[in-house]
Image 1 (cartoon, rainbow, N blue to C red):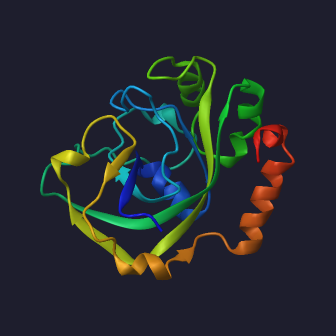
Image 2: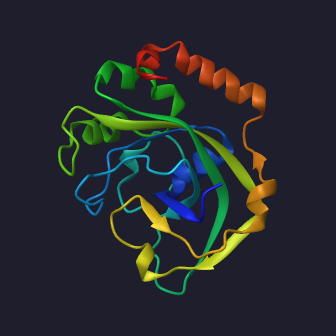
Length: 194
């Protein structure tokens, strides 16, 4: 597994990934992603929960808790690790609408991300990854650092990674995850898969 990389995502989405309700990530990128923009640059990463700083109409499910942004020294609990099984860029809106049952984002959120242009991404495209999520044996507690801030997806977490990652338990059992992977392989996005 890779070193300690964190993937920043809304807490409510981390909760959906942690419960098995959602196993795909849709991402366009943040304003601080760098010149090349966002990509699924890491196959193995921790889910780093961010405070929900938007309106509840950005999601269809879940109970977002509106809390102030993290401050240096705040304790954060990392509870899950993810492995990207595959990642692709989709350019067909109809393919994205087929995925609606597989995530909690509201259609307007997905549409906004799909239509956004900048940082190396054209309008009419979005990144998608199928991820296998694992619950850590015990929460990894760390203090928030200013280096974790900003509108970017990937952050470096303190090293070393907790040993509990090695014995983490899959959120979805093998049969359920293979069923999901098969479902996606038989969908309209199959033409974009390896």
